[in-house]
Amino acid sequence: MHRALAAFAALLGMAGMMACDRISPVSPTSSVVSSALMSPGVVAVGDSVQESSAQAFLLFDGSLTQLSGLAAAQDSGSSTTVRTIDWSTACRDGGTRGISGTVTVTRGNGSGSVQTDLELSFTNCDVGKVTLQGNPGISLKGQTTFVNGIPDTHTFQKVGGLLFTVEGGSQGSVQFNCTVTWSRQSGVVSTSGTVSWEYPIGTPVAGPGCRG
Image (cartoon, rainbow, N blue to C red; front, top):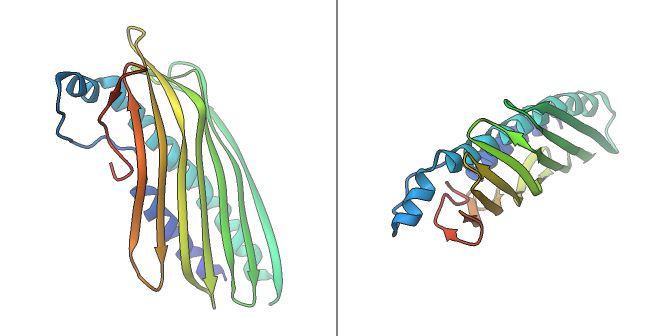
């Protein structure tokens, strides 16, 4: 099972990259959209959430290593092991950001599942060009099933939102609703869903989506 967990870590990392928030070029249709996308504040939102997502996967990898050791040490049979993550740090210019949740491994004779349930939180998190506040926060949830020690299906979801205040006091918001799926039968990683941007609040603008 520990080899299956290692394969799962690689698969989840790929899903995380597919459902991230990096700013990518688009073709704005108005000066309002253009100014919003070019705003250093909006860019900082994407970079900050991406950084927290990357930290979540680093913590996840550490937990997975411990869980794989426990799974490898156990005799064949059914078992469930849960690892709790509770991490926080100060943001660059004030406030905090954190990651909390669980990683659960269920196994039985070479088959089983790995479930992740992580929350990214931001509390007056000032990163210099923008201050982030959970609205209510961002949830990272995933489930991978295994058959005979081989990943069989995978689903990853990134859902939730943030408020962001840029220098000068203008406030915007972003809402994520992204899903990544994969199955061994198809071998295809599929991404669906939306990322909704408002800047300022009440004014929808085009922006990077789930594949952005």
